[in-house]
Length: 407
Image (cartoon, rainbow, N blue to C red; front, top):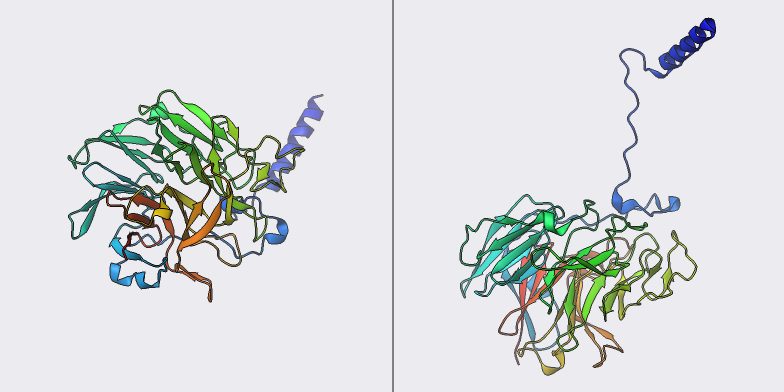
């Protein structure tokens, strides 16, 4: 028995010696994991040159923005209203007119001050993990990053206001992919927060692919929608008070789909299909399921393939012509998972009084040059000013455009 044991130990030692690199040599490095955006790509697509479009995270001077290239309906005008805020995304306005702007990759939140003839900006907070979510209510600024929630009380009049850390109350899941936020307070005073799928296509897990709402202090959390892959914008209809939101379609199923979605939520508890059912009833290639679209709320309108539909805004002002009243504006940041780029514009969506029979119409174009497949900027969000003009943020150029109308 002892001889057998010694023989076994000797065999193990020999095996270990064979597996240990000789002196002066190192073991071969492990292959790096594929980046998250490649997940769901078929082997025959491995040679694809498609990849996410890099953001320009340096300031762009107003003189370098070709605003004259932007096209609008007759009577409308675009101007570069503010610049110098790399990565500018969602905007929230305080009572005194100060505007707070979230970003994603650059990790900043800006405060923009308008003195009537010029706009100046400062950085409120820096080095956060994708703090794209900003909202303002009852004198306080709310900032939501992937792993942190901060509230700045009275910041509009006190630039040195210290943040209140509210992170623990909001129970934030840790994954980063599709977990950057758009946040807003609804007509009910609740704070609405999406938690995207932590993947291109997968079974997302109980904490993801959903929209939640909270009390302002983070209590009373409810999951009000599931099957939402990655919404980056929502708004409430001025009359029905129903919530409308965009949702990004998955990648690597071809140039022409699945299309992004514009959804309408008529009540809590709806399922919008991810990961089994996309767009107007397309079943998933990688997650087939019998009856995949049964019980799924299909979109009011599809928004085009890989369009990256972002912010939405129902127009309620008096500056624009009457036909724009209650019209939904949608910013489409633009595609990357497509051999010919698509989006890079702002469109309007009109429906009947019941929210049916939607129609899409171009509103602001000229960001994309179809002749050489290049783009100038990437519109992301809208904010309506008290005078009825409309601000549009451009993440790529770190600029904000003001849209006005006059005969």
